[in-house]
Image (cartoon, rainbow, N blue to C red; front, side):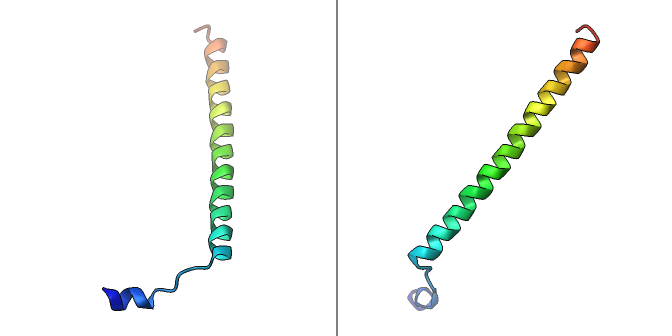
Length: 54
């Protein structure tokens, strides 16, 4: 196990920060898309229910 761990190339601080920023940005973008989809879906369902008097 020790010999395998010696082969691992660990990222430097700059790479870790860049990758962390990318993950946070992608998470925020996906969260925004989910929020917009949810808002549109709820609005559409409310509009359909109000059109049929429910």
